[in-house]
Image 1 (cartoon, helix red, strand yellow):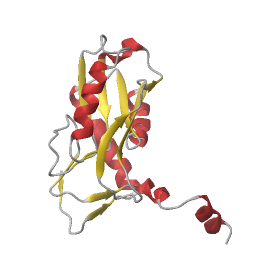
Image 2 (tube, rainbow, N blue to C red):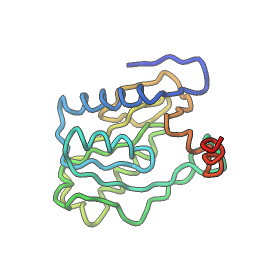
Image 3 (cartoon, rainbow, N blue to C red):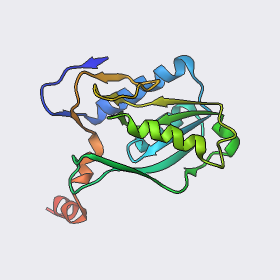
Image 4 (cartoon, rainbow, N blue to C red):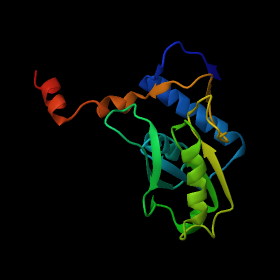
Length: 179
């Protein structure tokens, strides 16, 4: 699916988001059976939650900091990987990995994450295959995910339904709910 858009931003509703995750699940199911889902935090967290419920496989998360600055729309910077992965999977579950992120922006995060997984000592000897999945691929991304239901014909800033919480703090919530 290719989406045309007129603005710098692509605003995604919660309904569109969950429908896109469901389409991703159907794509994956056509020709891959992952033994574990590895999500790139934070963007993949809600996706992994849904996919793990559908596929009934264990999950793992790798935390990578890639955007820095004061606002939500700051540019990608140097990738910083957490020292360890967080997982409820056994090492032997990492045979057929599905590495998931929310989007392929430049492609750098997915590329470097594959390299990181292949070098991660507790699981590297168990890995037979790593496939990748994301919800959106931007036009300028150099990375081609194995599974991606939305191929964009541009490079908009994607505003996901939960990003509202990047712009509000606890004081803002107090004001909102104590009117």
